[in-house]
Amino acid sequence: MHSTLLASVLIAGSLVPAAALAGDNRVFVGLDLSGGKAFGSSQTTDGGASWAGGGVVKNVKFGNTVGIGGHAGYRFDPAFSGFVSYQHVGGGVSWNADFPLFGVASAFKGTAISHIFMGNLAYDLALSDTTSLRASAGAGFSLNAFSKIVETDVGTGFFLSDVEDHTKVNAAAQIGAGFEHRITEHLALGLDATVSYTGGFETGATRSGNLGVTPITPYKIDDVWRAGLKASVRFEF
Image (cartoon, rainbow, N blue to C red; front, side, top):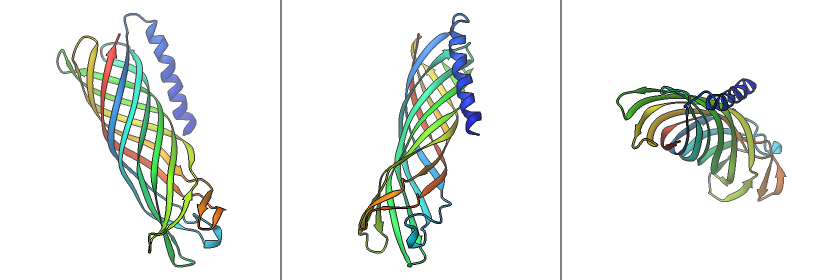
């Protein structure tokens, strides 16, 4: 699956210079701001220190997400365009881990961050001289990282450890639909609803805290999806 999506990015990227040579195709660049929600689950049943019997992850929750990014590409004709994009998306994340062997539980809280790189294709359906309905789809990869994950005791709230940060590479994909309104000949504003898949996250393999620095089995959050709204401003040349 990873190789297929990465191949799609390379193909989309190769279309951009080809379009530039075709004739009067417009170059465009843009800035994007987004907000939304993320969703994920975990199959981890052996997280944490092995001597503790393995932690069973449950109650995975993501907070609101905020993203910023940019895009650049070419308009092949009035309807079709291709572009590459980057998004930095972050938000809070938390989960609990039960340790049945000792009858205790830990709470984990921190930040989940994604750096998302994609190749995209878009289709615009003109509704008027200045407004169009837009649909887009993209594929690429995401660098997913947990940051500043803190472990506390569920019963007392006492600090237990700082869990090592870690970055994981995943396949990513996104679809979107929305509107674009042209303010001037060279300036347009857009608003899109998006749904994206960015794969999984996992912690590092050590913890630092009440027991010193000790090895652990990483905690994993699988198959993270994000839904949100993206506002953009686009400049055409």
